[in-house]
Every structure is written in structure tokens, then in C-alpha cells.
Length: 392
Image (tube, rainbow, N blue to C red; front, side, top):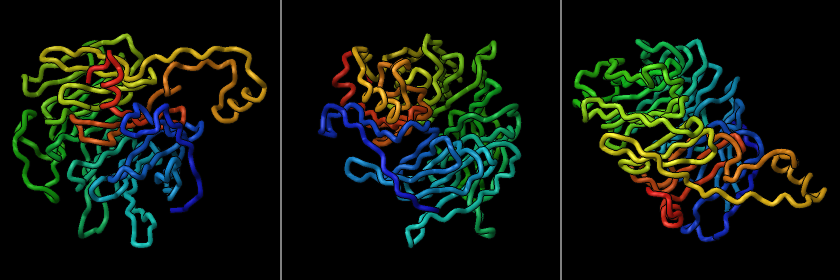
């Protein structure tokens, strides 16, 4: 992997004490950030700025220094996942390929091509909880379950095909390392078995079913009886008994496997969400086209919309703008004075939510990346203490 020198500015909030900061803004310029992932020690960051390359950054005081560049893809990188335990990075791209990157003794990232066997773009990738396999969704109506083959000494895949009818947009692993949820553009959410007998023991029964041969469809949900639009994001609850998803009809849905597969659905007046995760056993954080994360509380038989995780900032007074500040904005922010400015930290659609501190169901910090070139870290403990309307 080539190495180029690069640094980014970190916009510090009003407080300099990390313990009481509500948000920390990492500004990587004006180029959109399409996906990102953190290393196991959370000191390094992998991100793709809507290009075919993945930049690796390491925290250096108040700056980020670029320490590596993963540049083997031919088309735009669509997803990244950095395995916390094994320190392996997997990337996938619109070029229909995926690579596993391993750090060698010389400090260089060495790639291994994954045999995906797909003829359309790879759209999303996630390591399993045990990090002994990973799943790649694609536009080929296929989920590739990839694992390391000892004899071949490489990464091979098994396919989940039926009854997928369209592009896979999102995937999430069940805590048992066997089941996988997938959302797609055919308005469906499905739970499959991704059991690979070559690398793991026979699975135990779950609320989703007991028969789990590779590729078995455990359950299928329709986003809405009238369609409901694409499914943008899926996430299992911390104990794996519930499955949440976000649809393009601005809805959040939760299926409860322990309660006869009952589906709860909340249609909001917000713009569609593009990513979600469980921050507490019964609380979901979701973000997307509204440019700010929102909380949702899952009750026994309903979902309740909480509040935005950021207070609406007062609009800055227009006043007389000097020529100097006008050109500074155009240079640094890609903005001119005719463009409107949102009253939130993010100025454009949030692409993805990733956990930083804590685990699913007990999250202390998470990050969001956006098309505005920023990565924002949200401190839930501080947010809950300082915002009266925010219930976490």
C-alpha cells in the first residue's frame, strides 16, 4: 500500500476536556466520506472519500496523520470493516471485488483477493462477531459468505441466492455468529443461516429457528404491505431476539422473534434514515438524510420517536460578510454566501454510524460520517446529561 502524507483538522467543541465533550468533529475537507471503520484500539481510522482508495489515519494529538493507502480497487469503494480482534481490514467495491488486508512485520498492509464470484458491484461488507468469516452483499442478488480456506490459503465464498430478488443494501450479523440479516431493494428484510461447517461447530437453536443449513431462509419480512421502499439499514438487537430496519418510506421497523415474529412499525415525518444501531437494549440510534442522529425507543408493542441528538443551533446572523471571509468559506468549506447552512454539525446526509466505545446495547460513543467530509464522534453520556429532551 502506498503512503502519502496527509493531515486533517479536528474542530474542537467549546470544551477541551474529552470527558465532557458532547461531540468532536473531525474535518477531512469537502470530499464526501462514503464509509469508515475504526481499528480495535480506536486510535486508527479507515475511510473512503467517495473514491477507489481507502485512507488509513492515526490520531496524532489534535490531528490525524495518514499512515497508509489501500489503493488496489478499480472503482469506488462501497464498504469497509476493520476487525477489532484480528486487526484485518476487509474492503469491497463497485469493481465486484473484495480484499482482505493484513499488516505485516514491516508495517505494510498486504492484500489478499477474495473469490466472491459475483458479476455486479459489491455493496456492503461486515466481519462476523468471531471474525472467522465475513459477508459481502452485492447487486448480483447474492450474499457471499467468505471464509479462509486452509488448503487454498485464501479467502473463498459460499453463496446465498434464493429468494433474493434485487440488490443487497445492508447486512448485520446475529450475536451467535451464524445468522445474518439482509436488507435489499426488493423492499424485503430477510434472515438467513450463514453456517459454514468448515470453520465452526454446529449451531444451537435460536428464536429465529433451529434448522440452520447454509443459506436457509429463517424469516422474511416485507417493509410494507404496499411496498414501503428500499431497505437502507438492518441491525440485530444486542441479544439477537429483535431485528430493526430503516426503509425509504421514512419508517423504522422492529421484528420481535421472541414474540411470535410481531413487527412494529413507526412512520415518521423525518427524511429517510440510512444507518441505525442499538445503543441500549431498547433504544435505537438512526441517522440519514436529516443530517442528525435521532433516538427511537422500542416498547413492548410500539416504537416511539425520541429526539434529535443535537439541539437546533441558532442561525448565524447574516450581517455584512467581508470579502476575505467569503473566499475563506469557498476555499475551506466549498460554500459561497448563497448556500444555506443547516443548524446542525453535519451539513449533508449521514452515510454511516459506527460504534467507538462500548458494545451494541451499551454504547458510550459512536461516530457518523457524512457527505460533508466530516466524521463526528457523539458522546452519549454527556449528551444525555446536557440535553433535557434526550432520553437514552
